[in-house]
Image (cartoon, rainbow, N blue to C red; front, side, top):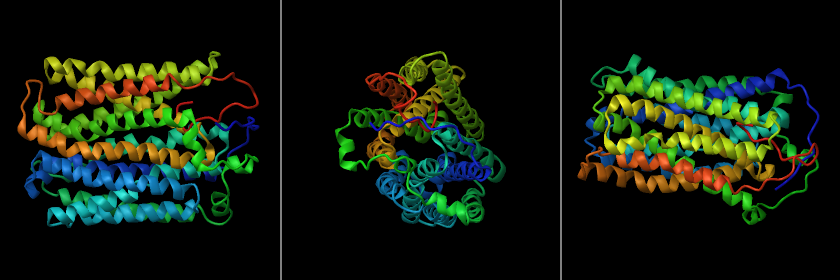
Length: 431
C-alpha cells in the first residue's frame, strides 16, 4: 500500500463543501431513481403482467448494466475531468428515469432500466474522485460520509414521494418517474454554476497523491496487493447483502408478512432511517476507538465485527415469529449492513489513492454481476415454492449472514504501527 506523510491541517474553502453537498443531492436523486421501481413493484408487475421471476429479470437488466459501467466509471473517474463527467452521467440517468414514465412495453421498460444502471454507476466512483481531488486528506472522511448519506436519504424519500404522488391502487405511478427524472436538470444547472472558473481548474488537477510527490503505481500492480483482495472480498459480500435487501425486502414484507402497499412505504422509511443511523453510528464508534489509543486498523476490525453481528439478528425468521417481531429486527440488520459498508469504503481508499475509483468499481461490479445472476432465480423460487418461513425469507436470511463473511475477511487486514509520518490515508467514511 502507498504511505503518506500526514499533511498539516488546512482550511477547506466553503465552495468545496458546497460541491460535497451537491454530490449528496446527486446521490439522493440517484437512489430515488433506483428505489422507485421497488416501491412500485406491485403496480408495475400488474401493469406489465410480470411474475416474481419477471420482476427479478427486470432488476437483473439494471444490475448487469450497472456492473459493466462501474468498471468503466472507475477507469474514467481516475483520468477524466470530473466537472463534466458527473453532470453528463446524471443527465443520462435523469433522461432514463423520465422516459420510464412513458413506457408501454416490457422491452421499453428494460431499455430504460439498462440506461439508468449504466449512468448511475458513475455516481460513487466520480464522487470519491472529486473528494480526493479537492478535499484535504484530514477532511476526506467527513466529506465522504456526508455525500454518501444521500444514499439512505434518497431511499427514505422514495416511499414518502410514493405516498404523496401515487394512489392506493397505483394511480399516477408513472408521474413519479417523470417528476424525479426532471429534478436532475435542476441539479446539473447548480453543479455547473457552482464549479466555474478556478474551481473547475482545481477539480481537473491530478490526484492529491500525485501532487504530494507519490510515485506513479501501475494499476496492474494492485492485483499483487493483499489489501486489494481483502477489500474485494469485503466489498462483494456487503454489496450482495445490501442489494438483496434493497430488492427483495419489499417483496418479503408484502408477500410473506402480509403488509399492504401503503404500509410498505412507511416500513421502508423506517428501514432506511435505521440504516442511515447505523452508518453514522458505526463511523462515530471508529473515531472514538482511535481517540482511545487503538490503531485505525484495530478499531476498524472491532467495529466491522460489531456491525456484522447486528446483521445476524434476523435469524429468528426461521421460526416465523410474526411481522411484529421481524420488522424491527430487519431495521437492525439494515443498520449493521450500512455499518459494514462504511468500513468497506475505508478499506478501498487505503489500497492506493491513484486507483481508488478503479478498485471501488471492480469490487462493486463483481457483486452486481453475481446479484444480477441471482435475482431471476430468487423470483423463480418465489413463484414455485412456498416454504413455511415465507417465499423470500430464505434469501433474506442468507443476505444477513453475508456481512459476517465480510467481517471475517476484514480481520485479515495487515496492522502496522501508527506514526505521524507514514500513516495510511484516511478512508472516505467511518474513520
